[in-house]
Length: 169
Image 1: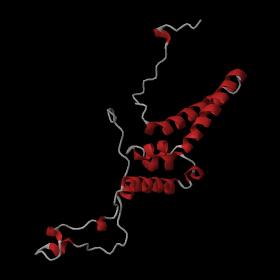
Image 2 (image 1 turned 90 degrees about the vertical axis):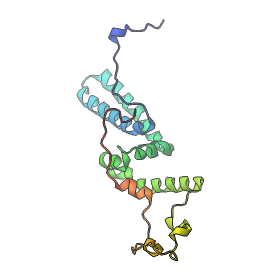
Image 3 (image 1 turned 45 degrees about the vertical axis):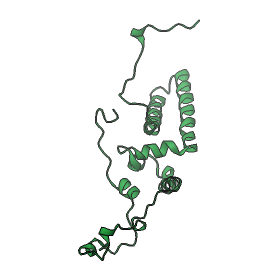
Image 4 (image 1 turned 180 degrees about the vertical axis):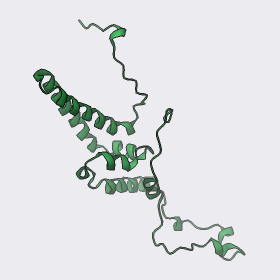
C-alpha cells in the first residue's frame, strides 16, 4: 500500500523555472554539481554516499545522452540568456570541441530545409533602388568586405541578455 505524505511534509522546489528545453542542460549541470558537493559532504556515510554516487551516475548518463539530440544544445544557444557563452564559461574546453561547427551545421540544415536565402546580394533590388535612378547610386555597397555578416554570427557575437523575473512569461 502506498501512503502519500501529508501536504505539510512535502518539500517543494518552486524556482520559477518553466521547464523549457533551453533549461535542460543548465539544469543537469546544476544537479550534477550539487551531487558532487553531496558526495564530498557525505563520503563518510557509506549507504548515503553509495546512493549519491548512484544518483550522480544515472544523472550523468542522462546528461551524456542529450548529445544524441541536437535540440537541447540548439534550444539553449537560442535562449538569449544562455547562448554559446554559457557553455564557454561552464563546460570544459574538451567538451566544446566542434560545438560552433555543430551549431553552424544545424543552422545550415535549417536554412536549407526552409529554403531561406542568406546572401543579401541574392535579392534583386526593386526599381526604386537601381543605380539608374537619380539617387540610386548611393545605395550600392561601399565597403570592401567579401563576406557578408550573417544574422547567426551577429546573434552569437552579441552579449547575453540579463535574466529577470517574468522573462519567460
